[in-house]
Image (cartoon, rainbow, N blue to C red; front, side, top):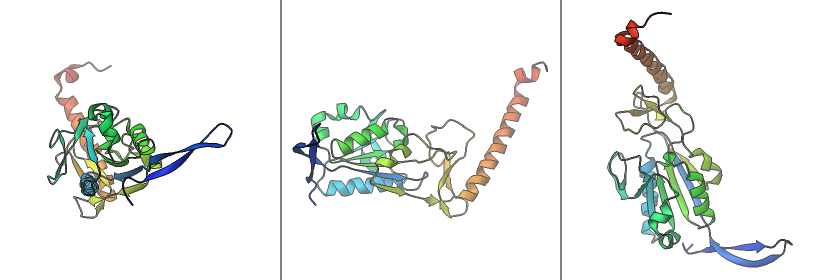
Length: 235
């Protein structure tokens, strides 16, 4: 099927009678999720390169928060690159890209999608109004296995959903979760293998228990070594 195919849409008036037929392209939304080091960005770049090789106009977006490997490129953990727009939010993309150019885009890739709060509205408009194909890659859960950002919110909009897995660093089994190695507790903590590792369910549960004990010990040592806290009177 040609990428320029337009699907007809009938506009219905207030009396229920058709008042004309307009043509809009058929958009799509594809979601790629999984833990860290599962190959989400690699899968996204593979799709974007494939679409570009077919002659379709493509653009890539990533969050400006993620500058681990490059500022103006999406980079996989093994070094593959693709130029991108690094933005604080998706709503600014049309203005920065240019409305005329945006309307000519066929495919939009979004990496690290969990950092975009306006992900739902952007994907909805791109697919339903502009007829674009949007390919989204991001974490479905944070280090506590709770919903991260708006990625899960777009599941009802999606044509396809791909859940990737990594390899557990501790036993080699399939890894579904991301374990944080540090004692930081904020949800957004950007890092690589120095901060996170993919683990299976067993080692996630065991690892979380170990981390909780470690945090308690560290907090206890902090209290004991803090001269102000040690000098505080007991009430």
